[in-house]
Length: 215
Image (cartoon, rainbow, N blue to C red; front, side, top):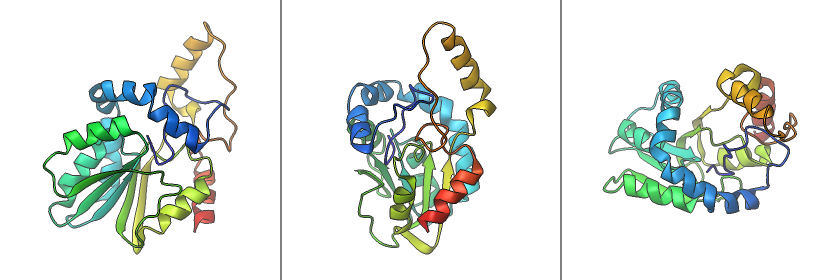
């Protein structure tokens, strides 16, 4: 789903794959299942995405990259905000999800979608005023390399606004689900503090270190 993809079916674990394996995953059954449940899943995540968009303070004419755009929910919302003089490019690795996004965006001239890995894609230099993501940046094998690459797409005054999960201990919805599951099945080994995963950006200090190293 993301430039490096999301993996919602595993709330944490050392089994997280490299980018090429994530690409295979999200172009297989998981990507298809997410696409089929798109309306439900987007409705669940919509309040968090809207909170991020409010923080981003997008104005007409803004050029935006939406990293890990999935089925296009946040990209469509951003397209309304940037207007005819702006542009939004949704980036994802999942063909099924991008196909759904493109179908939803039919007829819009200020919105395009592209299959690409944000870690390695050659973005046009200084082509974006804002890089936005709703749960699309926590799974990079090398987050420093990914953000360094994306940084090249920003203008000198460009901004970054990413919605990420706080630590699992502060997420009762997930924590309670894990506790119930642990009573019935053997749970995977928890992810290490430097491993990619849904909660890998939960600690502000780590995020600051990654972004600082990325320039």
